View (cartoon, rainbow, N blue to C red):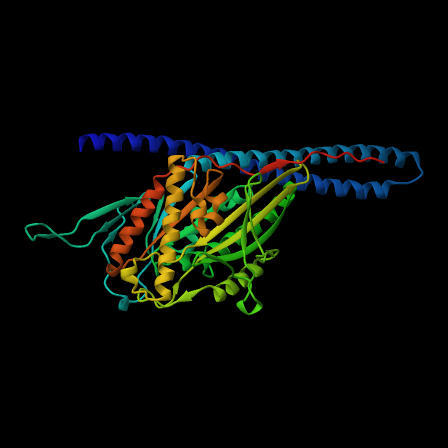
Length: 461
């Protein structure tokens, strides 16, 4: 125990050093953002001066020498103002580039695979008794303690052990989606900066995965609204973006397009990988150009209606498939000729549950077996990445094959482990938390953006 305490102290010292580094990076980021705001104000002031000078030039323009001299003077002042405005604009673009570099260094300090835990509230007293779950680390909100099921010793003495778990962040039942999104918004920004990002919810049926991901104020609507707002602001820094969204599900190891109703006849979907660009394309899958937030909400409703859902004893309306919202972002900078291509995958995994607990039979049993197999494959992929294995078994499951470039070292990954607060779900809760701990202890390398600079092409007459 003394040795373990010593190791714990060392780890805490390392953590404090890392936290200090993060604080320093955040301070630098804040200063850069302040400079950008100041340059934006200067740029607007110069543009106003430029318009006023042009108006005076028009007024003074005449054949008289005096007006001609005034015109020359005003023209010189105008050119100087335009040069100043151009310098301010170029500095603004440079500051944005530096912000991206610092921001993603800050992200790397946090680690490219993170795990957060969320405990849903009790929705109704009729759900049953609550498990004993405690949140002892109120300052950093990184620990959750779960009192396990009753165990009897060889002498027949009953006892219950408290099992502690630690993650990057733990959300208690009182936390709302807005605060949860505050923790993942930086990863959404990374997708805009040209990185592949994967955010997925893992947990048993009824633990709140779909609510967290796809509800009216869930992660998908919030992420797309943030992207629209950010894209609008980036226009003044010469960045323009295009967005395309698609929605698929993995059901019984088959890919289905959730934006194509079954009555229209579904075509077989095929996964194609571009190793050079680190991008994935799903052939025959409907893709929608997203030029307004309303389109995203329409997509969510349509996908939810088409998703495979069935009843189990664990939950009357249990999602029987993994749903994947794929958002492709392509940005181009007309001033620096940079081009970045990022993908944001928001994944609502099917409910993980033991076959005995779910009470599934027939087709439902096949579905549960398929779900558990694909989740096991996901764990195998993450474990192989952590070992630095030369072979990563992406192809053992349609889910991991689809997310290949958003799980590996060239990506940023966040897993939400969703937890039910009920005593009846205690064993499933402990299983989920142990799997999440395994993921949390994995290092998958350093992410790289798919950013390129196009060659300048000179005009020829």
